[in-house]
Length: 239
Image 1 (cartoon, rainbow, N blue to C red):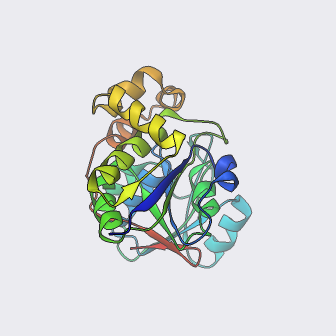
Image 2: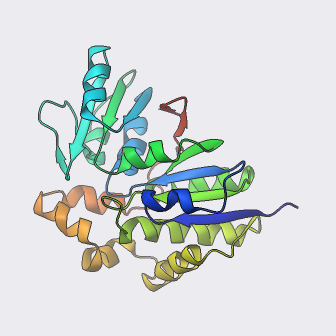
């Protein structure tokens, strides 16, 4: 049995320095809140999401009939129909809708990892579904954390540790990568409770609390609320 390798980029700025460049899968992660919100939007019925790195591109897609969804600095962009709240998406019926989506960190991360053979969306909400897909179809893997403006974030790294631990336990993956080992150790330290651990230590949690986003924070750390794995193909996220 071929054993696939795992590497972890803790921020998009580190992605170019990865050792895995040939055929591989990239998993883009932004727990608070872009990848959690993407999973929620698909669960609410969205047909496709176009991740964008600029508000100018967002306006272009809006003119083509896409619903605009945008966040900067944790707050919904003025004039956008939607922001970055997974709980708001889940409270609506979005069947048949197409979103043009731009965020501070998450969509930049998704696009950064789009050079892979396949780019998947990872969140605590789809952890088991993502693990199953990756073990059923193993391939060298790079987990790409969005962090905060190219800096390290606890919540994304906790997720990476949880995913890596499961993949290594499957026997289909192995690693010698220091960042992977560190993330697994961090996951073990939180003792399976990423919510309370992040409440104590994660800077972005405190930032979002100031914006009144407690419901989103609590939801983002729930495991397996969404059995879907969005994939980025030709610039569009679909199922």
